[in-house]
Length: 191
Image 1 (cartoon, one colour):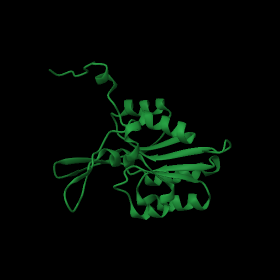
Image 2 (tube, rainbow, N blue to C red):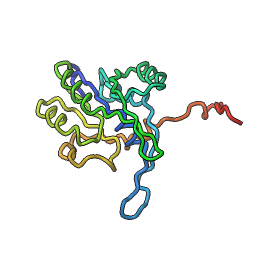
Image 3 (spheres, rainbow, N blue to C red):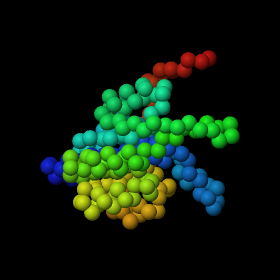
Image 4 (cartoon, rainbow, N blue to C red):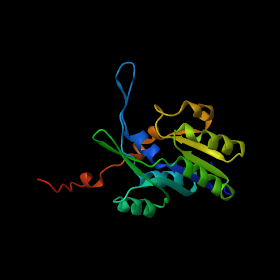
């Protein structure tokens, strides 16, 4: 698939990827469920990127939340290069939200790395990446745009549909499976 001389880098908006795959989607007209969310196995995802697309480096852009250090350590052990964004906590009524939008960091780091790769994979369905995707295509440095969920992404990106790979179509390969349940081990700590 790829020329041996090509160096492929992946740039991943972790929140866009995770939430887009995880959330259910309802048809706004009928109220019918059109997409049942699932949990992505980030370890298997990186193996898939490396095996199928020969990705040399995978940059994962993520908001830093104190208390999630074990998650970050695991992601780094899998082989991701983590780029952190400080997060803000805010309340809406009684609900508490954490905001850590990584769009600017992903665009900046892609441009910083531009001389180091021959092709890139952008993993996000957010229209804020339109200018980056447009630029990468003009530079002949865009391999794919991985759209997390084919039922929910920015219409601005449709212009680049020939580059699309839908993560939602890869569920059978990339869904997180609780390995302990398969072996009959119960990790439940409460009665």
